[in-house]
Image (cartoon, rainbow, N blue to C red; front, side, top):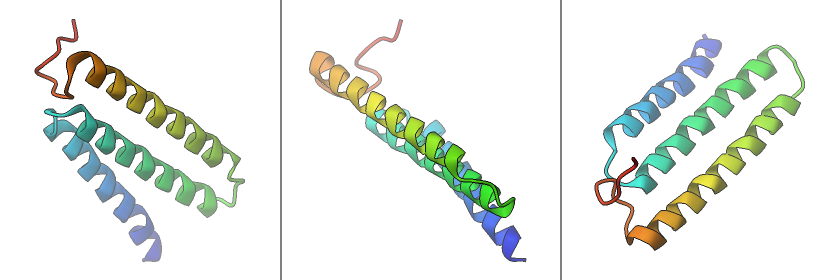
Amino acid sequence: MIMILYWSLPMILFILGLFCFVSNRKHLLSMLLSLEFIVLMLFFMLFIYLNMLNYESYFSMMFLTFSVCEGALGLSILVSMIRTHGNDYFQSFSIM
């Protein structure tokens, strides 16, 4: 019973993070925050899975390192877009 709770809570939060990512398409910062939430839930599920199988946590630390690098890259893109366009609205700049 407790294992169902361990797996259901991160899955529900992952689906909610995906829903927030799909529905919030106005600001770049809100999309980056929802992406970080999704990555955090993936890390939580990976950590539960590795602990359940009694594996080492080296892969989860590597995953966490790459997610931090991804967050820093997203923030640098956000700062660059705010400096060039003045805001973080998706309607104000064209991607193509």
